[in-house]
Length: 197
Image (cartoon, rainbow, N blue to C red; front, side, top):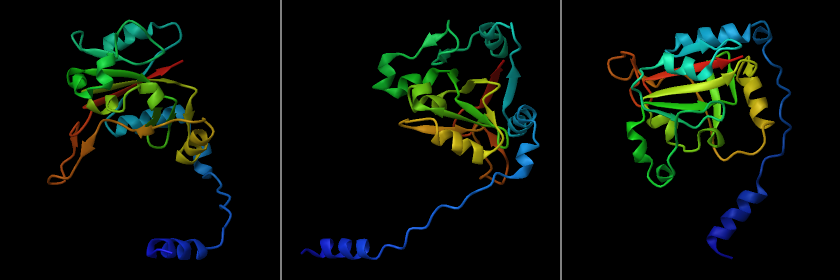
């Protein structure tokens, strides 16, 4: 038996006893939140922007009003049409997206306590997209808000299989240099969430 095999056998033989996971109770304060109001307050507080789309409003027109008319909008959302689609060549060379002003995508759900949205690779198609764009625009159904991260992880666990997923909250930011907050330092300069009715 090799030294490696002996070490691995010893590690396997000395595993700690299995302990059941604790029964975690969700914090009571989260149930008292108005999830919509808390989400808007939190995302706005961390530098993001929330635009509510009311029933009957034209989603495409609202998106166009929110940004500069000359913006290069790349759309990977299944909710709206009429914008530039993700080019096939970007899968081979993500650097082709360097001139994308706005990336428009769907989110599975949002988290009220921290203003984050949960997106998977199936929703934004290319892992580089939400991080290489200048401005991130997310479409989120208003009823898909959960109060906190405890509920978010329960929802993620029940959502089936996915290759890659990420919580995104607000524009990128840093305060490393002289403790001065800078938004858009190493990713999107802005994040706008369009809340769908």
